[in-house]
Structures are given as structure tokens and as C-alpha cells.
Amino acid sequence: MKTVVVALGGNALLDYGERPTFRVQFRNASRMARSLGTLLDREDTSIVITHGNGPQVGDELLRNEYAKGEMPKLPLHALIAETQASIGTMLELALKQELARLGSEREVAVLLTHVCVDGSDKAFDKPTKPVGPFYTRAQLEAELRRERFCFVKERGKYRRVVASPEPLRIMEIDAVRTLVNRNAIVIAAGGGGIPVIEGRGVYKGVDAVIDKDLTAQLLASAVDADVLAILTNVDCVYRDYKSRKRPIGRIGIGELEPTLGSFEEGTMRPKLRACVRFIENGGRTAYIGNLFRFDAMLAGKSGTKIVR
Image (tube, rainbow, N blue to C red):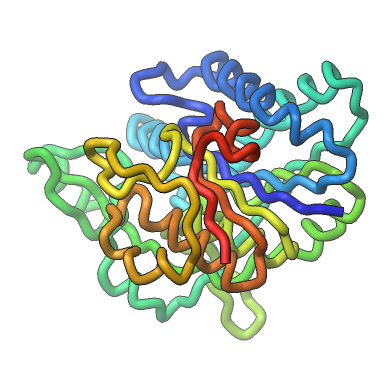
């Protein structure tokens, strides 16, 4: 039995400029399911799907902001849990729809997933991940009177930043393995996972954002996946990302690892870093490519293939 972990980028449900309605996102989820049709139809392949949640958790933070006069704000880790559930239901319904079209009765299971991080991770000393709404100076000062937090200035306004610590362990990994062994299609660890810290057997949610690509690698390695496919809105990895020049079709980790610093930190570098770690931890093949060219990517006609 072969195991494939598919990591969906934020564009799987909500592309740039689209209205963040349930209808729009479910339509995109249905497109995603159709694009994975060939994979879904392989009874000899176990499938685990993980996903981003950037646009959705941003929307939840805005809802928190607008409702603060009527309802207490929820912590960020609780909002990540909410988006895991809301995105999970869209993905499950879309996948079941595609499976029915294919004549398959495979189960689909959404698993709310917590990821342990180290409370002493250096990322907590210097938060860098922007989240939530933009504030004017006056709005920022008013917010800081209610709650102290770190912030950065962007485009003349201010925005909250939180830590992005390294993922260490997926709490529900045994449950994921059990579902994989039943040949269910598992949806897990969305948005990088719900971040928690552990101390003396007590777990506590923490306001942070875990890089979804690094969690995808952790998940793939933990289920002994053969393949990690990181699907996004570009056809492949480019040496020159801005001009989309010098595409990389196939590359070994020995050649790739020394050049990771040349790729943009906010876009391709974490994806490549995740692929390198996956191969180093025993994975066979990693891919980065376009969500809607999945079959072409597996056939070697699109995407970037990363090997040992």
C-alpha cells in the first residue's frame, strides 16, 4: 500500500480577489476534488490531506474584531480550531461528491488536530507572523490598552504579529495512522495544526501560527508516506520566482539544500525546506506544483520533483 500526503495551499479554497463566502469556497473545494480524481480512484493508495487556512483565520479574526463590543474575543488557537472544522467539512463534502462520481465508497474522515510546540522556542521571543486586521495608529493604541501584543508597520498601518514556532509532534497521530490503515481518506493538521504547549502532562493552547508546510512534512514522515505533494497556484519552482524564469523540473536534495537561502522566505522556501526534511526522514519523492495540474505533475509533465 502506497501512502501519499497532499498539502493544499490557501488557493485551494479561496483565490486572490474572491469573495470569502461558503458558496465560493465549496465551489473551489469541488474543483480541488476533481483535480485529485485519479489519485482518489486508486484503491491501493492511502491518502492524507492537509491544508492552509490563512484567508479563513484572517476572516475569523475580523469577526472577532467586529463583534468585540458584544462578545468576548476568542484566542487565536481557538480560531484555528474553528477553521480546521469549517474547511474540513467543505473538503469532506467535496471529496465525497467526487468519490460518488467515481463509484467509490471510501470513507473520508476529518480529524481535529493539535500540534505540540516548545514553549521556549525562540520564535516566541521575536514574533514575525502577521495576522488579523490592519490598524491606524489610534486604533492600535486603543487595542493595546485592552491587550498587549507585538505589532509591525505595513503599508502605513499596523498589524499584530505572532510567533511561528517549529512543529514538534502531532498529538492525534495514532488516530491518523488508524484511519490510514483502514484506507480512509484523512483530512488532518489544517492550518499547521492547533498549537499547544505541554508541561507536566498538561496541554495548553497558545497563540501562534505554525508553518503549514513544516507540519505537512511532520505529518507525512509520521505516517511513513512515500510521497509528499505540496500543491499551490504556480506550475513549479522557479530559480527566479518574480519573473517565473529558470524552472526546476527535477532536483536532488544534495543540490537543493545549499541553495534554500536563495528562495523567498514567505513563499517557496518553507515548501522546499519541508520537502528536503521529508526526503531526509525517509520519504521517497516530494512534489511542488499546481493544484489543477496534479496528474501532469505525477506524469513528469509539470511541477518540480524532489528526490534523494
